[in-house]
Amino acid sequence: MSETMPDAAPRGSSRLRRTLQWRFWVNLAVVLVVTCWIPLLTQTAVMKDQEGKILSQQTIQVRAWRSWAALATQGPSPAHGRAVGLHFGLSFLMCFTVWYLAAGRDLRAGQDSPKEETPHE
Image (cartoon, rainbow, N blue to C red):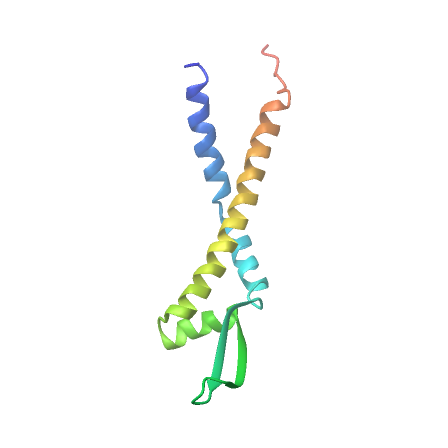
């Protein structure tokens, strides 16, 4: 069992290093840009009379890019902060999972392939 432990640590750190290369960050930026049209924040305004009856109700869906823009121009706000955090967090989790699994597959493929030995003369 102690023979396999030294191999596990470098493989894990190598897998993480392979995952967090510049291509991962470019892919994350592309995913953020492509998915920024998805509405992540919904605001509902309800107007009631004195008896509590609803006179009018309007629901606005705010797309992720508007939350990013509002956060950049108007400063921090809880609603837009949650929407931006959700957008970035889900995109990061999705990209990291795919890249981490792909890096593991690449490492396994490199280990499984027979290595050619060069003859020493």
